[in-house]
Image (cartoon, rainbow, N blue to C red; front, side):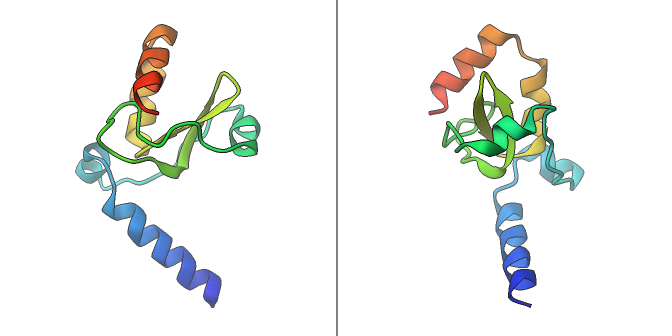
Length: 97
């Protein structure tokens, strides 16, 4: 019972911080990359979303990048991240610390 209540509370809080792309679609799915084992092994390397730097990350929405776990505010931002060149990713991540 306690686990269910905790999960419900976490889900409610996650919805409060959803970015614009999630609010428009009503979606809040978590995406992972093929190297999710690397991403899940360590802590998230950033505190702000590299795509929307005015938003804090959701620790459940991450990808692995260069052996680090990068966090995003929502799954929609991962879609944008995937479209970027490596140099743009590096630039955006440097600003999102």
